[in-house]
Amino acid sequence: MHHHLTLRSKLIIMISVMASLFLVALDQTIIATALGKIVEDFNAFSSLSWIVTAYLITTTMTVPIAGKLSDLFGRRTILLIGVAVFVAGSLLSGLSGNITELIAWRALQGIGGGIITANAFTIVGDLFAARERGRWQGLIGAVFGLSSVIGPLLGGWLTDGAHFFGLTTDWRWTFFINVPVGIVAFILIAIYCPALRHATKVKIDYWGAALLSIATAVLILAVDNTETIFADVMTSTGLTLVWLRVIMFAVVAAAIAGFIYVERKADEPILPLRFFKNRNFVTVLAIATFFGAAFMGSILYLTQFNQQVFGATPTQSGLMLLPMVAGIMISSIGSGQIISRTGRYKIFMQIGFLVATASMVALTFLTPETPYLYEAVVMTILGLGMGVAMPVLNLAIQNEVEQKDLGVATSSSQLFRSLGSTIGTAVFGAMLTAGIVSQVAAMKNTEYIKSLGQSSQVSAIGNLDDANTLLTLNTPDIKQKITDAADAQFSKLPDAYATKAREQFNTNQQEFASIVTHAFSDSLQRIFIVASSLVGFSAVMVFTLKERTLRSAKPDATPGEA
Image 1 (cartoon, helix red, strand yellow):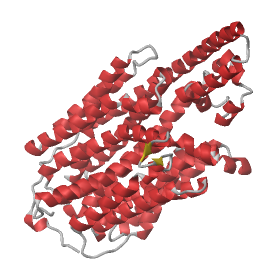
Image 2 (cartoon, one colour):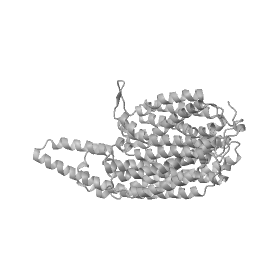
Image 3 (tube, rainbow, N blue to C red):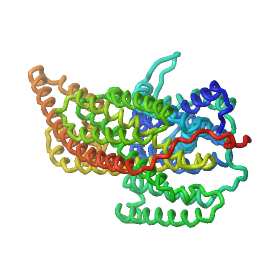
Image 4 (cartoon, rainbow, N blue to C red):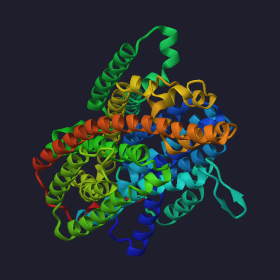
């Protein structure tokens, strides 16, 4: 470890690393507000899923490989490559001339994002002894919490056309904004960050990397937007969605079996199987997986709840998450400081997961009639619990391995959390869709939908048999556009008829909104029941962990510099 570095150098390194990680975390939320404009500009609604999935696949594939490579070639080298690739992918994404180019550059951007994610958490273990890592892991946790709010706000502001320095922004600026920050971070890391290398002989596990990449990529494709992405394949081959998924899961199983076989013989395995003999290591990976799924459920669907029920815009819905973010930041930073002073971490995990479980249970009582104050209080408490739990997972797993395995162990935790988030989001999305679909008939029979049936504006959004289309019709922006179009028609009528028509239109619109919000709320309650069960199960597993004393630095553990 590099304890000989001055505090000033360590601070500069960590600020640079956290700036890079902030860009990656920000990119996952900022793009959400720009998607509508992107597909509208490129007239590519059918490709919407690929914009997100391409990034997700390459990020998940890259994380474990990048973690191992950083152990072999040095943290600085791999991190600089990651920042450079991410910046290049961001710039090219912003310059994309069509949807195919954007998807390709998003995939490139995801590679850079995966490399940064794998190394940002690991580098804390290189620069600081175990007793000191808590406060830094807490700060990194706060970075993720902050990005979840700033992303939608900044994305909405840039996409809607902000003005500064004589320039007018659009959705492309959600990518361009990464470039200057990334360049500054690259320069500071290149100057101040040491090599942080732990291996003396380099042997790359190509087969292991290839098989793990196939397994993770196909798994993501099998659970995330499968029906949309492979619509043409199913049409041309006659395969049903069930059989397509059976084939894909068979490929995943075969790749995992091959991966295990290869890793047993590899000199420098991508993911050493000996780690799985460590009970704490396996337990933390399981906790990370379940926690990743539950966390995404709370963040993603609370945002949609605020838009559907309270009529919030994407920007407003981001602001409404501030109580949760405040809770995450306060508890992440505060618990990190205490852990560094006491050297104990298990008690914080126990408290964090118990608080998070109770808060998730409280969220199951949300209804369209629930005041926002209730949601805000519950979100604050949930944030406090999550803020304690999230950073400690990395600290616990780093304390289970030798310094030379720090990169691969930490990236394994990120991999399983990412897979949990992906699978959880897909399952929760299916639950939400099923709940909405059960009410499609009731929605379509409303006078409001009947009046929109022949509208070209509605057909551009999607098919009225699709639950997502019906949800979209209830969002503030779309409702306003429909209302404006209706007003334009009503203005052509005599005043008495126009007033009556507007009143009837508003009544019909409110009737539709009531059906949508109650269907959404009922589905969301079931989602939070599952999410609270996952967090509760994680809480039980936390109690089975055997806490090991946080190790101090050893003079002979300093790696050789390249």
